[in-house]
Structure formats: C-alpha cells, structure tokens
Amino acid sequence: MYIVTNPQLLALEQNRIGDLRLELQIRGFLPGASGFAGCPDVTAQLSVAESRWRQQLESLGRTAGAEMVIPFPDDRDPMRGIADFLREAQRQLGGNEIRAAMVHVRMALEEIRQQTSWSWPGKKDKEQWTADERWARIRAALEDQASGTVHLQGTRDHQYSRDEVEALLAMTAALLRIVPPKQTAAPPLPE
Image (cartoon, rainbow, N blue to C red):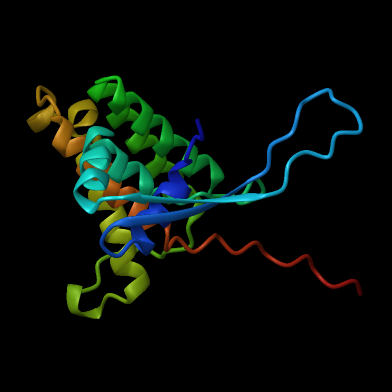
C-alpha cells in the first residue's frame, strides 16, 4: 500500500488527461539483511480508467476538493498559521462539526486581516477604490459572513449548512493565495 498525499493527489488530477497512467520504479530488499543489495529495479505500469479514477475521487468526499485548494506554506511562512486554521476547519468538516469548522474559517479570516497590508478604502466612493482596497473589502465581507451567528443580531440564530462552510473555506483558501504580507519597517540607519 502506498499513501498518496493531498498535494500529490492534486498534481495527479491536474496532469491527468483521460485515464490515469502511472509508472512506478520499485526496488525490493530485505530489512536487516546486511550485505544484501536488493533486487534490480523493476518498473511497474499502472493504468486507472478515467471513470474509476473519478469514482475514487468522489468517494473521498466533497470536502477533499476544498482541502486541495488550501495552500501549503513552508514552516517559516507567516501564512502558515492561517493555512493551519483552514486545514483544521477541513478536518472538522470531515467529522461533520459544522459550527466548529466555521469558527476556524473565521479565525483564519481574522488572522488574514492582521497579516495583510491591504489598505481600507474608508469613505471613498466605490469607483475610487484601489485594487488593494477592494481586496480588503472582500476579506471583510467574508469575515462578516463567517461571523454572522456569533456577532450579528439578525443572523444569531442562523445554522450554517455544510455547503456554506465549504464555500467560505474555499473562498478563504483562494484569498490566502494572494495575501500580501505586511511590510515591516526597516530599522533606522545608524547616524
């Protein structure tokens, strides 16, 4: 058995045309048998019919598609925490914990607000908003939607559906891909 990670699954799907065709290089060896170099490499050709591949993807569940759009920043990336919130929301959706998943989506959006350099348009006319200001408004609208049952009187009794959480999760993951990090001020030059 070989486990395929989510990024590998996404790469397979993006590069597949028709049937899935894989070529695996296999080398056998005996663990603990010192001096045994193993057998020569063997190349195995695997083919999975497109219909079977699609059936297998569908069996993963609808949330697998949302998970595959969450970026995977490296450990030093300041956006790592945001991606972790989104992956936790994804995990909770898998366990049908709808409200808890929405809380993690909201936490991701709040962190995006703290981490970005998008400027707020203030009282400008909509036609005068810059691209940065428009992204700030989009992020704010997503956060408002994700916060409705917690903060807003008109929606306090609303129960989010799985589809709503999946939509906000996917939109937040897409937004994370374009978040410009806050610019830190350069230290003053010595006199």
